[in-house]
Image (cartoon, rainbow, N blue to C red; front, side, top):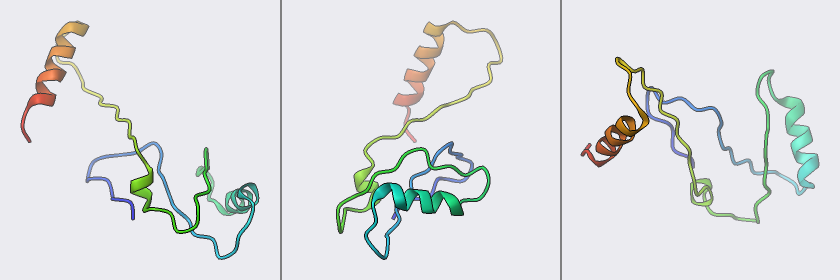
Length: 92
């Protein structure tokens, strides 16, 4: 099972694992699924996994994050990089 995002964390995309009752070619399964999706929800990529695959979170091996920080004063790239490095070194 995939882990839920923390409160206040948003996502621009999600992973979902779906187990089919019968074997179908990938394109046929995705076409049928797309016909049932609500407006605004799109499948942008898919991958069929072998029978009895590992949990989805074991298959997914990356994540990307974007951090939007409003600046209270002008800052150059070097200052921002130094402050970000300090933030990443800080303890929780």
